[in-house]
Length: 246
Ligand code: SF4
Image (cartoon, rainbow, N blue to C red):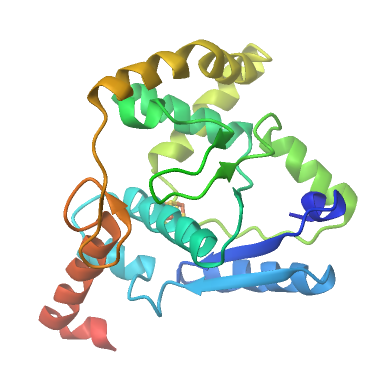
């Protein structure tokens, strides 16, 4: 965000407060202080106020919490970009994030995700344009930049990250990179050059038609979008299990 600002872009920060104890409050404070220090605008979306605090989602949904959490974050990223009339949504995903995600998509042969993973996605079908300017840089390099620049950082890992698939894939790829330097970048750039176009052609043939969610209007291939279904499941659990109301 700071680099984009220094390059002359008109940027506004976006922070999703996931409501995770011992983690989210510190992350939010770090982001708020950062934006205040550099006089940058900031939008904060609080998942507890949306009825989607991640601990509630974890407790009452019978599915891996990281998958629901990812869906919720993508939803609010896109919604904030569209509601705010922004021309593009830039995220801080680095090479390690992208490689772990690509590897996960390959492990499931998820054609839908493989057809559009990349550092730029044009705006279409109710989704804002997306860019990932840091996609060639490793986590280590971005952390070094922040350190040398004197940017305050926050380290309080999500309590749900141990055992998460992405965490495991990242450590797997770190070991591979140590043995064979350059593999991460080769894997990702090779996919962008040869893999993605092939999966995109496949998706064109079998591509799902998107409708508007009956509840919120968000683009979805079902009648009710994934986030509205998560919200309703948590609300239902809240009615049935009184201790959630405290
Ligand atoms: S590790 Fe925590 S913050 Fe990350 S996706 Fe999983 S639940 Fe969400």
